[in-house]
Length: 416
Image 1 (spheres, rainbow, N blue to C red):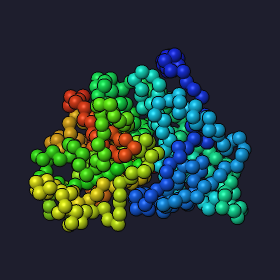
Image 2 (tube, rainbow, N blue to C red; image 1 turned 45 degrees about the horizontal axis):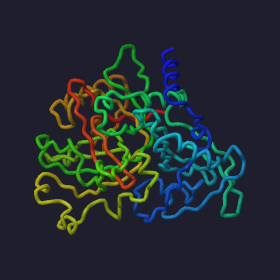
Image 3 (cartoon, one colour; image 1 turned 90 degrees about the vertical axis):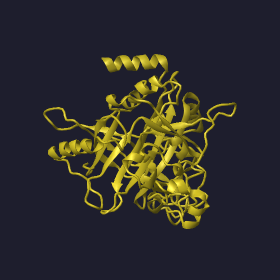
Image 4 (cartoon, rainbow, N blue to C red; image 1 turned 120 degrees about the horizontal axis):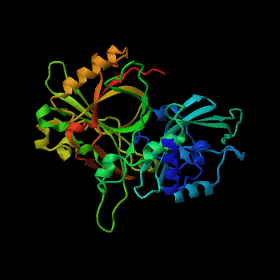
């Protein structure tokens, strides 16, 4: 009854169009060709054939061949359909994240559709999925014909499209509390799983699909007292966003910020801090200014001497590793609420509490190369702002610690 009332209310605020582009072949935004084969550090470029469907590129290298769909009505859509959706919604972006060659005649494409719903608070809605396309492999011509096309949304099939949208369309408390501070955030997809237990558990269990992320790490030389994990390193930023004046730029925030801290060496007190932020659809769809990767992710001595790292900064941390883009595989993890930051004294106690709870319930812990559990920290009070040129700003919201809006997480072995 409650859900029916909410749907009716939303229908009055913003009439629901027919979302055919999510249940039929997804309209693709025409992505420009990659200018340099070294601009992507994606596993997909080794797995996906150099093809494109309706102008949307599969990351197979510096160029892509056109694959034309046949003229059957169930496999094509008109240009007016795409333009109609774009005119109704705000900031509509359709991004191809990656893909995989299942067989010589079958390709799986991972995509994400994101937009601002046309209500006065303009909530950011993001829905992702996988499309499987089967081609006629018997054709000898350079143009291949698609025989079938099927779409599957991320997460469980029991979650309807309407409920996915409704969960994101309702105003979020902290967006309302900090109204005017920033646009609505495009959150990384994750789906809560049912925990088989007689009594409520102190943790929540999640699964998340493969996600394109920007990662960077530093070598922390001072420890918790330096609070280096509290802010993103300067090396992750590749753009300056104008937020005031006549030339104000539109941007899309994404979140949350994920932080992992691990020991550098067995006999060292230094640690490695790594950040991972989800890349929003507007940047993926544009894909003209991806961060360079090159042959190595590490800065050489000449770059260090030319001011990449100042002498004062070098006393506290080492930023020799470049930021890089990577598709993080699907994950399964558990989290508990935490009030504070990633380097607070209470982190150790929270980790132990989480570890004891999940192992007691029989979940298998993922371990790193040193045999240690893989913990991480979700900084939900932070979001990062992107234009089509790249990451340009980090936004940190004030939230009282006693509300425990951040999370401590642990990686689990993925179970189908």
